[in-house]
Length: 420
Image 1: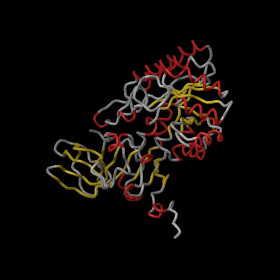
Image 2: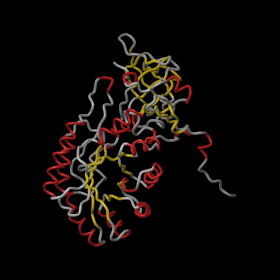
Image 3: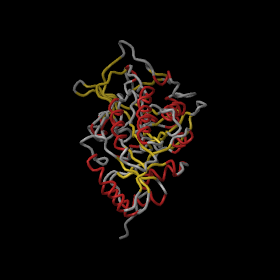
Image 4: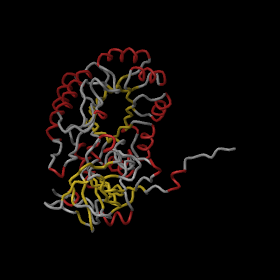
């Protein structure tokens, strides 16, 4: 087993122990070099001028990281007025924001309309509502290509069993609703799921999706969605997603569509976690060791409120053990099965179950890999725990605080006292 953080010089001029002592734990740490590398990878997925990759703000909404994405030429997709607001605050122009709505209120749609944000509607009823609010407007529709893929049933967003998108059988009604409100359908989009390492289902979905797109005469863009995977089992040798050959397959599908459609349009993708996941880690400290019925437990401050993916999706995150500023390298004779748990009052508060790790000691710092996506963005104050700080290791190797840790007074900041 190798140390990912050492081979990538993840912590630059510092180390996890120094960061833990300076900023406290738990602590999210990001590496600017890795983030920019991933952003450039997706920005150059298809070597054509009319292609753009969208940063998915739901994966990580830190303003500093959003600004990196903007600098690297990425556009962005948003799922709520809050995400639109934050993207605008980060400096994204409205033309580079795509609002992919799902079961939203008239007020939410009106917010996007007022901000001049291109909006996708994912049901006939929502398209009709949009037409009532914005007659004569321009919009996109989300189509279900009939294919789903992902690492867990909860993240599969295409196919037969999903709440998302308009079914192929309902496509003819899109034109009827659009005509009733004088809407112009200028975009189509899809999303089949999240974290696939085999691009075959995605390519199949793209090909069928583009066949559906031929039915729309006024298109300005087509968005393939995304959900590109990253190797969460990298310490045991899992290979990277083959983005190069994947891009060639998409390029071929694009060329075929353009030939049939008779003119060029903009093509988009939403790589999702691929951009931010590997560029972030989560540091936590071991506070207790115990055994119950022969099971060894390492009790940490990395509760499910800080990183919920293992509890919600049974997700795997590689873990490195740090002591005295250096990783404890896995070697024969020092490996033991341990269940790593957090400090939340829930039996499901488990970060890693029966994981073979180097012998852990109290006060060790654990480094949870690939936590840059759906880490902080899904964190909460459950048990009235404070959400952690976020630190960015810059290109110069120096750490910079990009979000402070919650304070106790933040827990009551939003309350209003009832008058007697």
